[in-house]
Length: 323
Ligand code: PBG
Image (cartoon, rainbow, N blue to C red; front, side, top):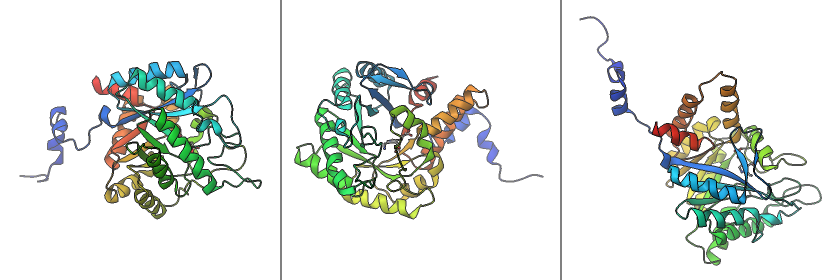
């Protein structure tokens, strides 16, 4: 008898067999859908086809649809009408995100609401913290404002807060502030390993949050570093993070794998705006098959180690999974 003895192709012969031996399965349960909420009227986001800045009213309607589609959670970003030096709309009791949280919780009580905790959408200079006269982002002074932001979102009804600013010590500062405010049940998703990535470009247009001067390399991580990410993860775990996040996802799959090996808590990956825009642009040009490419990317992110995937593709994915 000629030919190989080992024949892996035996298990690939038809879809039923492939289904039986499939190692990774995407499900609606894995997904978080980011929503942008504006104090103005609903507008499309040019750099992110299919995504919108929603008015508070319409964000609540969207959230209801998301909940009924089976997606467990939304992540909220606010675009305030007024920005200032200290980002005061981030922690205003009636800030745009706080209003949206209340409306969404009333419309879809079972949907998990996650608040992004950062100042860059709220500061006139577009940095993620407060700055001094030299334009440096001040770490410890910023912590207090981040903690206030987290508490005000939790008081409005957020189930989870997700600090994305990359200041040192913010998980501990937010945890103590929440506990002191009697909000010990509110969880923290920490953007532990968040890189200074060019893949956030479309988001910054969407959130009008590009830095007016300089860049974010003084606080976000250098894309060349892997060991440093493990240090950040360990610090955030020690400070009380309930879920760890790696961001972006696609160019950092090695990190997702490595963090998964050492991390005892759920691991999330953020499939960011630039990753979304690349697929959308190529699909619009007819160069890529959108559905297959998206499913392959998200499956790869899950295979690499993510338990949770934050993605703008979430509503499409849920539709495709039902087909
Ligand atoms: C806020 C924040 C950003 C993103 C999430 N939270 C932008 C940034 O750090 O500049 C990016 C998300 C995306 O690109 O989809 N700090």
